[in-house]
Length: 311
Image (cartoon, rainbow, N blue to C red; front, side, top):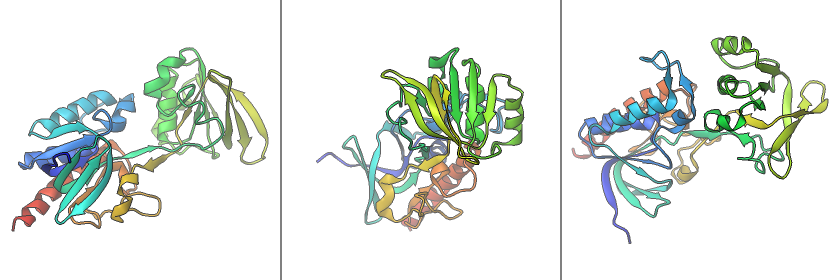
């Protein structure tokens, strides 16, 4: 059996919320481990420009991630790779098991695993993933210079990432399921001025088409008339919402019916000593600023919780 390493706090996820929680907890002289399945920063690394985070008029997502990481580790918090498979209770301790066959014990756990892009679940989507189907403009946009692209979605992410793609693509067509956009007015206003963007409303994608190599178009349906059609495209970028990354925590009975984690205002779940923050939480707003706020509260609360264990 591998040795179980013990910390005061294990933070599962190293996005903005997780890094903030780690900073607050380590600054309180607690031993802290951040675990993440990839590079620190989470979805910040998939974001071109951030213009709504206090202190910066505009900053690239990966640059903000690096600033946050430096702040999170300055008081001794550690960082390691690993996807958490399960959290189990061992008395007052929590046993955290990863896919790297490592086990960690902690007095408190902060879950900051965030959410993932929702899929359309239409024919061709999985088949052409990585061959023209993408969920990240920053990651894959460079492969489509001078091409015609389709963006599916009508929220902030769809419109913002669609406009980012116009820096590279010849044309970006945004397919919106409803009869209007859900994106913030300031985001809409900017996109409407972009002559390389076109918006098609009341339209759903029913299939993603391609050949043996890559995507070459989509099948569509008008949600009002039922009329079907096809649109040619070299790539399809999908932004239709998010799903929580909570599969590893189903045994804890802390999820709602949609899989989001339920907490109180102190970020405490139904299990004492287990907290949840950021996009994985049942919350009305999922932004960098709200994740950071959640992380600050959780970092302080774990200190209070661990202090109470000693009394």
